[in-house]
Image (tube, rainbow, N blue to C red):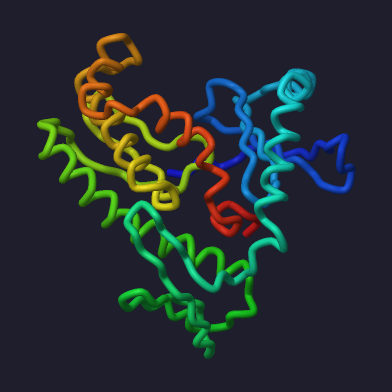
Amino acid sequence: MLDAPTSQLSLWSEEDPGESWVVRESRRARRLAVRVFQTGRVEVIVPPRTSRGAIERFLDRHRAWIERKRAEARRDAGAGEPFPPRTVELPACGESWRVHLAGGAGRLRIASAPGLLSVHGDCRNARAMRQALRGWLICHARGVLGAALAACSGELGFDYERLIVRRQRTRWGSCSVRGTISLNCCLLFQRREVMRYLLIHELAHTRHMNHSRRFWQCVAEHCPGHRALDRELLDGWRHVPAWVFGDP
């Protein structure tokens, strides 16, 4: 299940005192991590019971990087993302979905046809709209990522037990000792080559449950350009639309 934040506090950017940085406590986190989204939103993920002092020291060490990424995001974002989005672009599977606000009464729901998402219900309810889009994204990702993982494992000769797709804030994928692979639905917003690298990365963990030299040799054998793709994936959060993790 998606990590539920057990605490949240706001810090402030020295450059822009009017914009908060959100700090979330995650039960799954083993170390502090920071993400800068394409809107310029800064989210810091911390392990349970991390002190405010430790968070502030972490941010001080990474402040230059954070500000640089925020500046890049603002430059690229232009006027910002409209919401509801007019389209949902999924580079990993080469799909573009037009969003049509059909309106009507009752609970907000999404009906899909090839290349079209029809939103029925009270479209003025931004919270319900985000939840509906997130639900559709996870459901669609199960089909796309499930097919891609099965094809990749068959092609390269890996075996895995099952697949779980989640909307995660801190990780792109993982593999359990029992062969269960977990993938982030946000992979659909990455390039196809980046998605394939992550699939190979997790499949390699079915043979090597670590990041040893043998593990990376296995990855390199099946994905020669993995280093550049790994760096691209680390910065991949900036390609995720704001509605995926924005305030519900």
